[in-house]
Length: 144
Image (cartoon, rainbow, N blue to C red):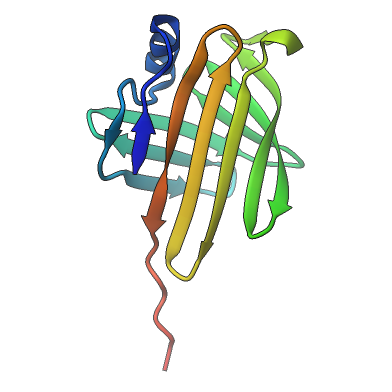
C-alpha cells in the first residue's frame, strides 16, 4: 500500500479529523470488516494511524467517517466499481457545491486480490487523502 501526504497544513488537520494518513509512506495495510445486515464498519490500520468508518446502503451508499457524512452513488466500471460523491455533510452542515471535495474511490479485483485507489482533494486545501494498493482476500476452498 502507498499513501501520499496531505498537500497543506489545513489538509493535514482535516486528514487528522477523518483518521486518514498524514504523511507519505509505503507499507502494509491491515483491514477489518465488521458486517451486519444494517451496516458495515471498515477499520483500516495504516502505519501509525487507524481510520474507521461506518457504511450503510440503500439506493445510495452512506459513509460516516469521523465528523463527515459522505453519500455516494455506485457505478459498475470495467473491471470494477466506482463510487461518486453526491452529497457531503461535515459536523451535520451540508457542504456547498463549490467546496465539495473531488473524490476518486475505485476497486477492482480477480480471484483473491482486491485492488483499490482512493484520492480525495478539497478546493483550496488540495489533497487530503490519497492511498492505493491491494488486499489479499481469503478464498473459500471448494467443498468436497
